[in-house]
Amino acid sequence: KKEKKEKKREAETEAAAEEAPAKKAKTETPAATAAPSGDSGARVYLGNLPWTVSEEQIKSTFEDCGSIGNIEWLMHSDTGKFRGAVFLEFDSADAAQSAVQKNGADMDGRAMKVELAQPKKAPVAVEENEPNESVFLGNLSWNVDEDSVRAAFKDCGELSRIKFLEKDGQFMGKAFLDFDTVDSAKAAVAKNGEDLLGRPMKINYSKPKTGGGGDKWGNANSTGKPQRSYTPANPKPEGCVELFCGNLPYSIDEEKIAAFFKEVGATVTNTRWLNDRETQEFKGIGFVSFETTEEVDKAVKKAGDYLDGRPIRIDYAGQKKKENAWGGKW
Image (cartoon, rainbow, N blue to C red; front, side):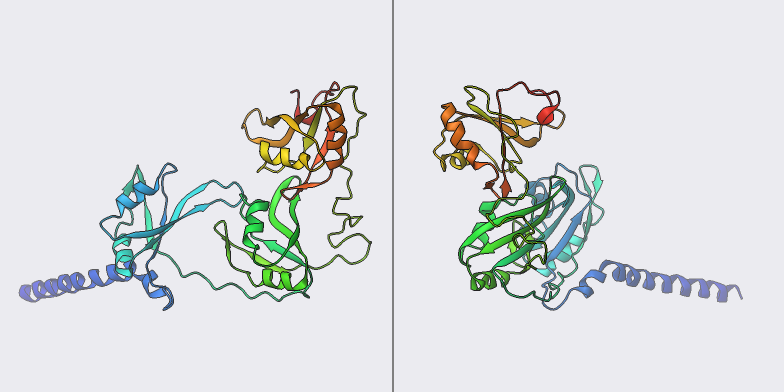
């Protein structure tokens, strides 16, 4: 009877030993079975990374697994800050499987999360609106500017206007594009899903506003300037040689503002950009100086004109400002 109990215990131990590896194998490879035939299985998700991690550190950590062809850094869409995660593209599925074995390994005091990436989903088919010269452009990076948009559509035809959409002064990651012909717009819509600054563009023909008059975006006029007045609200001080400029794009620099005013024959001699006192981030406003007061008269004609997709608000500087005007004392 004692021998029977011992044999039973030995049999249970052997069965458990055989079962354990099977369970381990099951938990290690679920993502591999999920990889589609069109995906090589060489793409790995790497998460819970320290904020200070570098490309060199990542490649050094996984150098014994295989060659990494590309690292895709993941950023928060609202702040543009690093999310502590990346996607790694290895040269083979075997290299990716080897990398997954490092799940839980330490990197600067943090346990890395390493797993095979899920396959990229195919773009969802969107019903196209009626073809016209205007195009809606969405899912844009916060770093996008007029130059990068024009470069993306340079082979489509003449892009006459870019209007970036904002809400309460914040960029919404969307824009409207005006092309010279419907054919040009069709070429642009054909780029739906293509990459722009690391994000797949969402492109469709825009729906024109109906009723109420105005242009296709609901503006009260069709001159290309917004309904709201961006012209000086104050009288020009005697001898004024400086202008306040608001609603400036975050891509602004001295060269761009100089070229902007040069279009009306005004020469910029100095610029002062205003930053937030606490964060030191650019507030989208500044002061621009000119050689003569006559050139200021020319420069104010640019009020409401677009610079990198934003209509510029202009007012005379030089007069005593009210407290907290334009964000505080200069």
